[in-house]
Amino acid sequence: MWGAHDVHVYHSGRKRFRHPVVGDLDLEYERMELPGDTRLAIAVYSAPPGTAAEDGLKLLASWSATTEVAQAAEADAGN
Image (cartoon, rainbow, N blue to C red; front, side, top):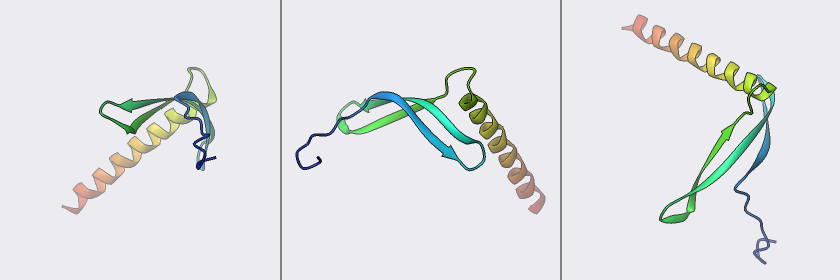
């Protein structure tokens, strides 16, 4: 398929990720090409409101914030 260039580029849709802590996350995505170079793109992922994926992302965000606070406190204690 690659040799024949018979591939499809999707610019939006839904992908499922399996995270070891929160499990499956069904996220919507949109791919946006950067001006000036079509080889570069940014993909933005989001969870639909009111879904288990939204709850999972919120849990990961709070877990990450808690970890960062703990690491900062350890660094301050070492000084």
